[in-house]
Length: 511
Image (cartoon, rainbow, N blue to C red; front, side, top):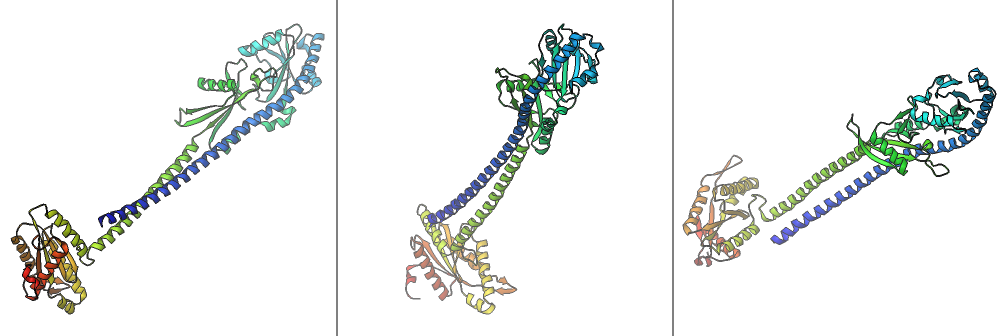
């Protein structure tokens, strides 16, 4: 019976655990799916951001390449007109430079002397500009002064206005001056304004919460430093951060995206910096620093915050499910134990019933066989219980049975087992008995318990009982035999109106 009972408990617990883990597994899969969806959404947004700014630069570069070729041819022809003018009239200070501007169209004219200073120009903001103060560029400009060829720069941002400009350089035959032309591309080609990568970067930063900043860099023309390009003054800034410079150079050299996690010194927050190269090579396959850029996209850790929220929500759900299932398991086990308890206990008095008593007797017999102790079974019957029911009603009768149970439980030894067989019949299993005197002492004690009345609903109820006694091993070695003989002894005590009777063989005949 114990094995069957244990199997029932184990089976119930296993079923609960299986369903619990199935539910947790389903929840975990849902959590992982949400995590993957969030990552995919952020990845798609980041690719869109990076692709948008990259394609804008690529498209602008393609367009500038076409514009550059057109303007290069124009600027060379215009420069030849200026060289011809210089050949005829070498005193550049006497030139009507504004009239020359009207002749050559929408180009500004610069005349740079041997000291690399702008001494004449139609663009007043650059008058007096001293390129000798720019070591790297002055070296390049000096080589152009000493050369005999026409040279143009690619489209670039003006260092004074921030506008997109193109410049050309043609030295005079005597190498005293450089005749420079410039043209404002935004005025000549208004469509260029639609290719504003700076505004696009700002819009993308505003649109996507995970994008902290977008910056565009290019290599310095000397190939040693890195310049940050800005739409506002200063339009070019030398990057002083050594680590960032190395990452940008590495991106340009390898033409591969560089990713690094950096911590903001002021806020202490960590940001992901992604360096995306846009590398252009010349027709000869050489690296073109002028047209190559690196896009820095800085991402904050918003995705980790959102993933953290999902993780917290998952663990809260797990905690809730665990609490619910523990409660459910407790209730199931409680009901199983209660049903088990009800199967082995009297519903009214909560004392062990006949089934459980027989179990206790058999266990006690097994334990007593290996010792010198005896067992005794006391079969107790309430003589006048029927009269109590008839006089006061069954409710009072039930209360009387409870009071009898309470008195017996409170006054007998802790290891004595009291049970109710049904009706007004109780049994008491006395353990570890050494002699018959111990049994009679317990019997006297029981009889004395009921000399005083029971108080039930203001009623004084007097109880009389008859007790039959059987002993192990003298009267048998099985629970059924001992119970039967104690029952026989009780009937003799009741019919002869004795307080108790101990079973013996003479009691087997007719009463």
